[in-house]
Length: 334
Image (cartoon, rainbow, N blue to C red):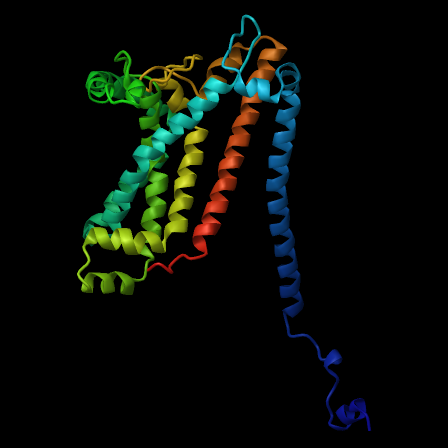
């Protein structure tokens, strides 16, 4: 007697003939449709990025042919009259202003997150968190107008003190020498720091709050101070998420346009002083795109946009590598 006969004598039907549970086929169909929709959404995002890069590359091809890749990157001359264009001052301005923004925003964001997660009483946590997050909802042009009309006059009165205090330090003194104009690379970096502050601090606060309370309580029981708990327990436990938040703020700073345009001074000449006017890639695009009258001029501006995309992708790639490296041992040091 084979297995089929035994099943038949037992009054059972083979598994292949057992009817599906009610609604099972609909659930399978729904899962299939959801899977396909998710794949389509991801594919559309990748296709949009690829199409954007291709379109920008095609539009900038004239400039690429005339100046080349390396020639355009290393040239510091930007003269629409002679049709000579180079991206070096704007690349440096973009990177320097973003670095200044991180220099000011990261410590302040860390302090805000530690205060909310470790120090602040429960009744004040939500109002402070809401006030910080409200900064993210302010349009960038409002930041720019505030920076030009309010911050720049105040900062101009502070620049003589900055020059007298830091301008004579060997090695870095040249960075803080210049006339007190109130606008320039340092002013733009400070405005950017205010803009990216809510992004970094919100992520830090959220990840600090998910640290197991047993770790904090154990550290406090051993006599650790609030600073020691934050620096040796909370931060190592959440380091990959913190780095991710910092790079999120960096990406926001790299692409900011209007706020920077108002306060950076918009000079095409490169200066070693942070108090002098400068320019970034987004500010140049905002200022000169409507004035571009020749094909080479327009192509060079679009070429700058392509370089900005490349910088953003490189930053994103470095962020992924760093986060993967840090996440391998996350929580182990605690």
